[in-house]
Image (cartoon, rainbow, N blue to C red; front, side, top):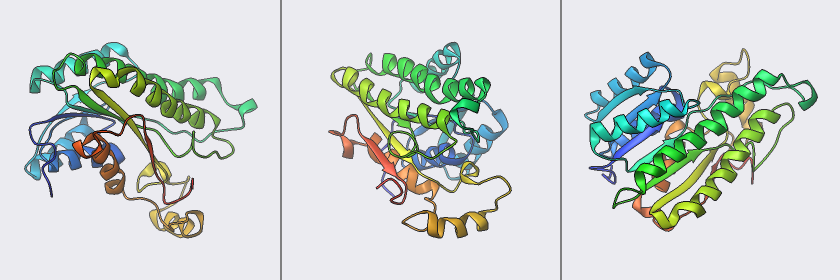
Length: 254
């Protein structure tokens, strides 16, 4: 294991489970001090405990990314605790089983866009404000999806629209702020080994059987594989990568 992020402070939203937890663990394993953020304190505590058990450094901060005041306070607490913000991963997101556009409940539309788009927007605003004030700048990785800009499927219009917006917002923000010393990119996972990719009533074994034919790779991606893509984009190895949307989906959107 390398130590690409020794001495760096990394903020991860949606860090209580799934991809967010895997990303937090991966950054900590490479030397970063991690701020694990999310809405559920017990889940964040589990992430921090796992990092501590492995010898890493992390703190948990509860925050709702749909509230700009929460996001601003999250950045302030990060800087107060660790002195700056080097990397931010805007991972918080929600998924709901959908309906055709004409039948989509308004509350589902608003909930999905509030978290998946507005939450990323609020994160970007607060993170960029801090990073461009630092001599060292920073790097931001947004978590989008292969459903959105890259592929579509019936019945998921709100989720698809939101994640396509994240892809577009990433590119726009990247061009706006690369001259400020802030590099912004996105990762777009396909089905991964998280609860979000399970269909109602489906077990892990059921999903594995389904993915043998549903994915060109024949399986879901591991959360560690998604985390590796995030860490690459945040690292000095990707110093000239700006406004990229890296799809990690086993070839589904190829």
